[in-house]
Image 1 (cartoon, rainbow, N blue to C red):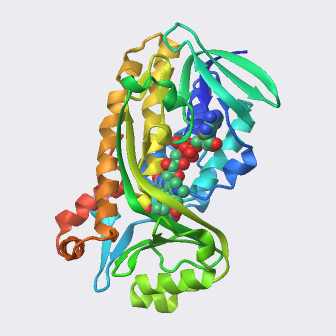
Image 2 (image 1 turned 135 degrees about the vertical axis):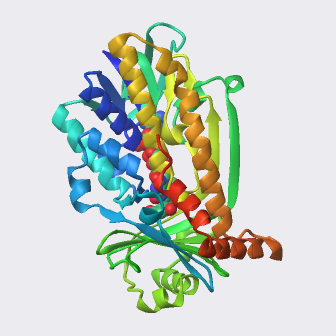
Image 3 (image 1 turned 135 degrees about the horizontal axis):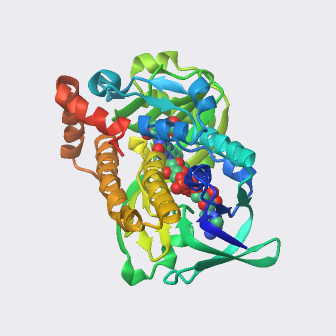
Length: 389
Ligand code: RFL
Ligand code: PHB
C-alpha cells in the first residue's frame, strides 16, 4: 500500500490533520492503536480557543459545535477571600468555546467517514523506517498480520506514550520537563454546572476547578496527592471537598449527583525539540505536554496542525519544501509561550507540598493584583483565549 502522508494516531490532532489534508486533495492513512469506541470514551479537554474553532470551521467539522457549543465571554479565579472575573471578550474581543474533546473527535470521525478516508484501528508494533530516504515506510501488525505502507511523509500524532518521538535518535533530541507533585482528580456528573462560567479556585485546601460540558453535564477537578487512587474518593468525599475549596456562594448552590466518570491525571510540562526528523514530523501531545490549568493541550495540538497542514500541502502540491523546513521552529515559538502560561497558571493556583508560607502569600498577591489591574487581567485573557497562530 502507498499514500502521501502516513499519520500515526487517531486522536484529535491526527484526525484533524487528515481532514484538512484530504480536503486539499492530499491522500492520508491514519493508524490508530485502539478502537474508535475507546478513543471516543476519553473525557479530556473542554475549552476551545477562538483559533481552534476557526480551524474546525475551515475543516468543515463545526456544524454541531456552532449549534451546541457554549461560547464563554470570561472565567473566574478565586481564593478564600476574592473572586476575580476575567472578561475575555471585553479585554481581547475574543471568546472561548466550551465543547468537549470527545465531541470534537466524534465530529472528525463522522466527517472522515463521509469523505471515505482510510483509518486503520487496533494496529500494533508500529515501526517507522527510512526517514532519511526520498520515500519512507511504516510497518505495523493488524489482526495478526504484518503490513507495510510506503509514504512521502510520516506524522506522529500518537500522544505522549506513542512511538514516533522515540524514533528520533536520543542524541538528536533535547527534552525539557517539569513534573508537578500532584494530580487532578476529575469527575463528570449529570448535574447543572455550578456557575455559568468556569471557576479556577485556589483555596487554602488546594486547587479546584468547576467546568462543564453542557447545561446538564458538569466537569469538576480537585488537586490531589499523586499517591491517591480513585477508590479513595467516593462521590460523597469528592463533593464535600469541592465545597470546601470553591467560593461559599458557589458551594451553597452546588447541585451534586452520581459521578459518571472519575479519573486521576498527573500534571507535567514537557517539550521535546525539534519537531522534525527527516521525513517525520511530530504534532500535539507526541512532542509537548502542558498541565491542564490553562486549557492549552488540545489547542496547542490544533495550532501545530494548522502550521503543518499548510506546509505539507505546499510540499505535496507545489513541490516546495521551505515551509516544511520551517515547521519545527514556527510551532515551537507558540508552544513555549503556551508552556509559560500553563506553568504560570499552575503555580499561581496550586499548593505545593512542603512549600513555605511565602509561596501562599505570592499566590494571594497574584490574585489581588489581578483584581485591581486591568493590564494584568488583559495579559491573562490574551493568553487564555489563545495567542494568534
Ligand atoms: P492524544 O489525544 O493522546 O491522541 C493520540 C492518539 O494516538 C494513539 N496512539 C497510537 N496509535 C498508533 N500507534 C501507536 N503506537 C500509538 N500510541 C498512541 C492513541 O491511542 C491516541 O488515540 O493526542 P493528540 O491528538 O495530540 O491530542 C492532545 C489532547 O488530547 C490533549 O492535549 C488534551 O486532552 C489536553 N487537555 C486539555 N487540553 C485543552 O486544550 N483544554 C482543556 O481543557 C484540556 N483539559 C486535557 C484536559 C487533558 C487531560 N488529561 C487527562 C491528560 C484535561 C485532562 C484531565
Ligand atoms: C475541562 O472542562 O475539562 C477543563 C476546562 C478547563 C481547564 C481544564 C479542563 O483548564
